[in-house]
Length: 141
Image 1 (cartoon, rainbow, N blue to C red):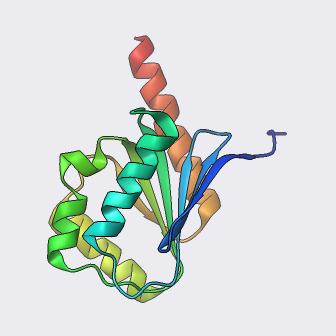
Image 2 (tube, rainbow, N blue to C red):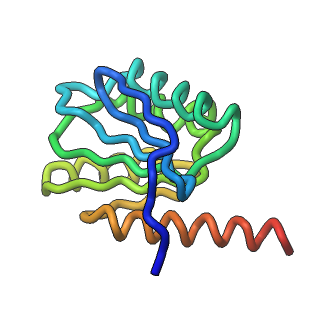
Image 3 (cartoon, helix red, strand yellow):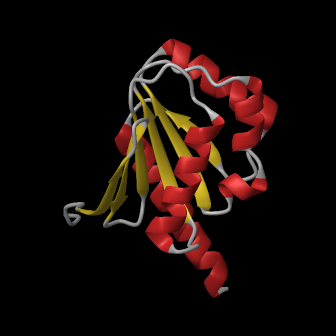
């Protein structure tokens, strides 16, 4: 049986709640916002830096309502400066509209870090842990 996950640190932002979990995954629970903006991307990047002082994390983003990033924000979010603290990203959505929007981002903006879409948090966590283990194994070789 695996150990219970605890929250080591939490930051509340007007657009999200970010939690550093004991399994080293950072979880961004997106709030019900209308637009996903460059300012939100900057706040998420800053939060990752603050959690790890420059360390890379596996990241899980949970969206429960549709928020529409414009093309400029999607392009900005995929830039190196905004993913430098992200080892991999699991995006969890609960609707067809969110799946469509996320797939559009993945196809047209091709993130430079492993990024995958999920319907359930448990599946996302399992994948992020697998990515983390593969990274550890590659460092040890």
